[in-house]
Image 1 (cartoon, rainbow, N blue to C red):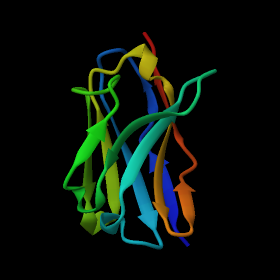
Image 2: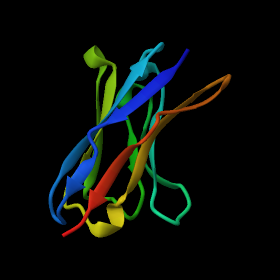
Image 3: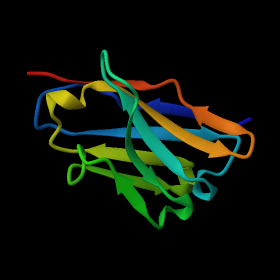
Image 4: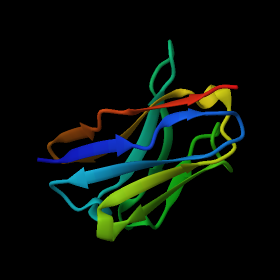
Length: 116
C-alpha cells in the first residue's frame, strides 16, 4: 500500500525558512511524480509544486516561484520542500501527493504557520 507522511511544519516568523519532508513507504518515490499542495484557512486546495519521476523537472506555482524548491533523496525514499522567505500568505496545511494507476495518495498534512 502506498503511504505518504509529511513532517517539518511549524510556526515561523515572516522571512524565515522551513523544510518539509514527505516520506514514502510501500513504493519507490523516485519512480513517481510527486506534488505538494496546500490549503489555507477558508481557501481551496492549491497546487504548490511538483517534480517528475526521477527528479528531472520541477514546476512551481506562481505564488512560490523563487522561494520554494523541491528535492529528493532516493536513499531515504523522501522528497523535500525547502521554503524560504516565508510570508503570512504561506500559512496552510501542506500535503504531498502522488498517483498510480489505482488512485491518488495523500499524506495527513503538516501545518505551516507564518506569523509575526
